[in-house]
Length: 174
Image (cartoon, rainbow, N blue to C red; front, side):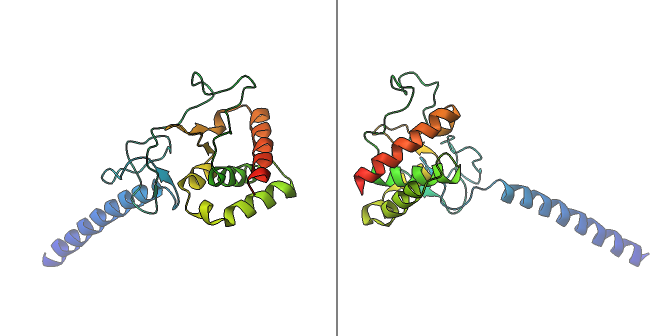
């Protein structure tokens, strides 16, 4: 009789441990990778699955970006110029370098020039300390407003054009 109670107790403990492990694995799977930028301090243990969601944050590895209040999209009134693209005039060298890396990774540009420009800019001391580099790597154009523009909301042809324009701007900034 003692043995059957002992087995039942061990079985109950095992089930509880399995439930805890499953819940922990689910939480861990929702955390963002290191280098993710956020506009607000971490909010408890709630992970963020959308970088535009500034209300909560991941638990580890995030870079805090001050003054960001969400992201503008192609549908945001006034976000696009007459050519259907956001302005890159006020983009910092760090943001340009990050965006070029994003463009290369997403295959919107595939030239040696774009890669070379991105690498040269990324080596600059002012770029290494620029929080907008991280934003650019996520496809967010920081154009001197508190709300960066989400490049992924543009049509593909516009993304390709923007990436080409960023290569030219990066050449000017070298």
